[in-house]
Every structure is written in structure tokens, then in C-alpha cells.
Image 1: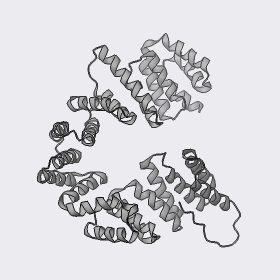
Image 2 (image 1 turned 30 degrees about the vertical axis):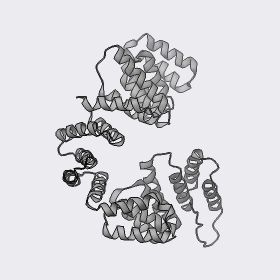
Image 3 (image 1 turned 45 degrees about the horizontal axis):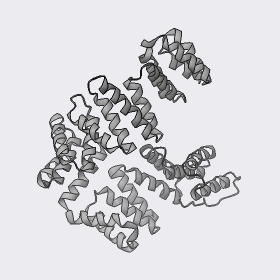
Image 4 (image 1 turned 120 degrees about the vertical axis):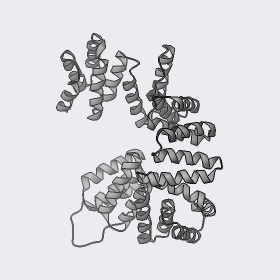
Length: 400
């Protein structure tokens, strides 16, 4: 930790390094007040203090957010510090705090007649959506649609907002701008195709989707293009699939299995169909077939839900190394708040007798939902695996 503190403090002038090191090492209120008093004598060091805070975030120092707040004490309108602090709030689920921080910054900038800032609007759009502030989100999206300095990612976020809101006029204007800006970008053609389809221009939509599929550089782009092409080219099959997925658990298992078997045979590149086919097969305990269906979905789309299901199925089929790999893949995509993936990972590690790692993964699951029966079941498995080996016995199955 001491090495990390030294590395963090290197961004500051020599006179401020020692106060910062004491504040980070102790975390005491007195040391933080002393740091703030020292920084107040150097008001021009806000950027250097922000660099120190950014370094602290990279090193995952627990007081990184407090350091960002110190930057804002010196310079309340520091955009980078505000953005980083807001992102930290969002990561912890404090969306209203993130929104309040960014909205107040924008209000101060507007009062001071500062020019519009696309980066601030991009952050405000995300925070407003997370906090349920739809009017603020809409205003930020409109500003982004016309901002000359908006990043491509900001334009994509605004286009996604307009699509979800079914604001076809705004969507049309923004999609035309995106295609003109990046005619070789598959995302531009995907959004344009969606707008054309919503407006009923299916032939033009299909042309843009074919371009998107040909230009796709990621599996997600290719999957989205194929999914929309399936919807346009096979409306009856699409209607059947939508009806099936909407009432999946209400439909008799034999009926859903038969329908999904037909769909996967007719449309072998439809990743979603393979995912639901796997659900249906697993529900019937046909685990080997379910495994193959989920593997097919994962190959086609890298869908994190397919990896999550594979972790559970591999575990039931006594393939703990494969289960561990799939659980980790799911956590990479779904984030560290996915309780089921932590449980799958804990069970897979326990089966490999990597018990300290298993306990750590199970603790993460338990922190997300204390007292869940699945947590207790995996804890029993860990307790059993702690016992000395006595000859050969089959690994215990834990149904998640």
C-alpha cells in the first residue's frame, strides 16, 4: 500500500506530497483537513490533484473518491473530476447522487454562459437514465444530437435513447448524421435500419442491415444485424418466436421444445433461439443437449446468459474447470453484481478443492442476497470438500 501511495503522490508538487501521503495512509479527518488547507494555498494544482486521484482510482485505493471530492473543493467546475466521481456513484448504484452532481455542474456552467460540453451531456444522459430523470435525459440526448464535438459513443447513446423512446423524428435526423459521418460503421447502419423498419420502409432497412452484417467487426454487431434481418425476412417465424419467449414458462415443455427445435433447424444462426432451446432442454433435464444448445448460442453471440447457463450445466455434468471458465466469462459481461454467476463460480472452485477461492466467491454471492438457499447449498459442498479424501466417490451435485 505504501508503494501505491508514493505513486499516487508523484503527480503533485513536492510541498503537497507529504500531506497527501499522510491523508491516504491514515484516512483521518485531521490529515484530510490539513491536505485541503495545503491545497488551498496552491489553487492552481487542481489538475495535478485530479491526476493523483485518477492514479488512485487505477490502483483501487479506497480513498480515491475522497480525493476526487477534494479536487471539487478546489475547483467545483472541474469536469473530469465531476465525471469520475459520478461514474463511481453509478457503479455503486447511487444514481441520484451522480445525477445531482452533474446537473448542478451543468446549471452553473449555463449560468456562467459557458459553451455546451458534449462530454458533460454524455455523462448526464447516462446518469439521468439511471436515476429515472427522463426529461433531463431527453434534453441531454437532444443536445448531443446537434453537438459538433460529440463523440461517436455519445451519438450511439443518444440514438439508443431515441429508439427506446420511439422519437422517430429525432432518430431520423441523428441516424442520417451518423451514416454520413461514418458510412463504413456497422452501428450507423443498424440504427438507420431500425428507424426505417419502425417507419415501415422495410426494403431500405434490409439494405442497411445487409451492409451492417457485411461490415460487422464484433459478434454483437453481427448478431444484431442477423436478428433484425430474421425479423424482416421471416415475419411469421419471428412472431412465433416472440410469442414463445413471452410466455415461455406458461407453455407446456413438450410444446416449447418442439417449436424451438423447428426454429433452430430453420434458422441455425439465430442465437436467441438456441438460448431458449437450451432453457427448454435443461428444464427437461436433457443436460447434454442443453449444453450443446448453450455452446452454440455462445459461439454465435457470446451471450453472457449462455455462459451463465453453461456454468451451471457444466457443474451438473461434473466439468468444474469448464464451469469455472464459463462463470468467469459471465461475470466479465454481467458485472460483479450477478449473484448466480458468483454461486456457479464458488461451486466450480469447490469441486476443484480450491477452497479459499470458493469461500471468497461464495462470500460475494452472500453479500448480494444473504441467506439464499443456494448459498447454503454451496457452503455445504465446501464443508464436504474440506474433509480428507477417503477412496473414490462421486462429486456431489448442487442444483442452482
